[in-house]
Amino acid sequence: MKTKPHTPALLAALLTMAAAGSASADSADGGAPDYTAMSPQALAEYLIFEAGGFDLDAPTQEGGTARDRMVQDEIQQICTELKLSGKPLDRATAARISALADESMKYPEKGIALGDWKKGEQIARSGYGFRIGHRNDDHAAEEPGGNCYACHQLDPNEVAYGTVGPSLAGYGSLRGTSDAMLKHTYDILYNAHLYFPCTNMPRFGYHGTLTEQQISDVMAYLLAPDSPVNQQPPATAER
Image (tube, rainbow, N blue to C red; front, side, top):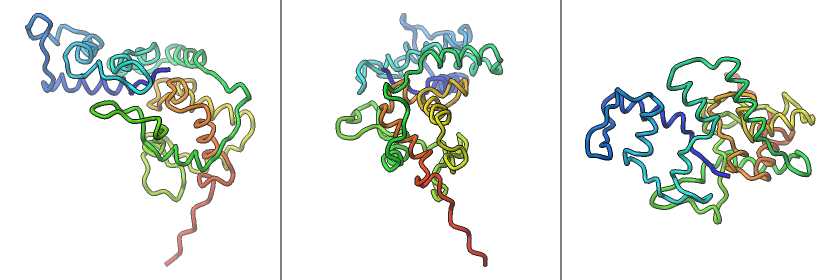
């Protein structure tokens, strides 16, 4: 499976640069391209694949090149076009995205189960993996992480966390560990577009960013009763 960056955000950033006059590129024949004559999608494709701003031949850990990561699948294309056009996500498009995500789902042969929450905590805190450049990350020496704290609160006693996504503190204590909840949590980690079309959340399972066992461990961190995620923070002492 290929692991791709969050291309919609990248395309939007490139378009902003171009609109501000900070992006420059030459066409194949040496002349300056007419950005104003391009559609947003065509301009983004030009800036990524033809302007020479990226080392598209750089090898990646999962095999292939940086160019392979930049090629969008259908879900990414739909969400990018919506973002660049400024159009809201309508019901029909949302249903199409959810259907594509549903088609991508693959479940463990032995069923969905919770792993080791302590390992899941390490994965949730780690942002390691899949970086390319002058020195690629070595996945043989260290497994990639999920970098979950970049977007979510998990352990209620942790003070450093992002707020792009909702708080997940008390996730398991609020929801329980029924088979339906195990599947729901697995689905979100594998391909969150199933429930949240055009979400910013990475598709950890679909892109192979996390292994099946790692997803199981992260689920344990979220759901296990003894996980720090599901412990009440200490009461604040009154002064």
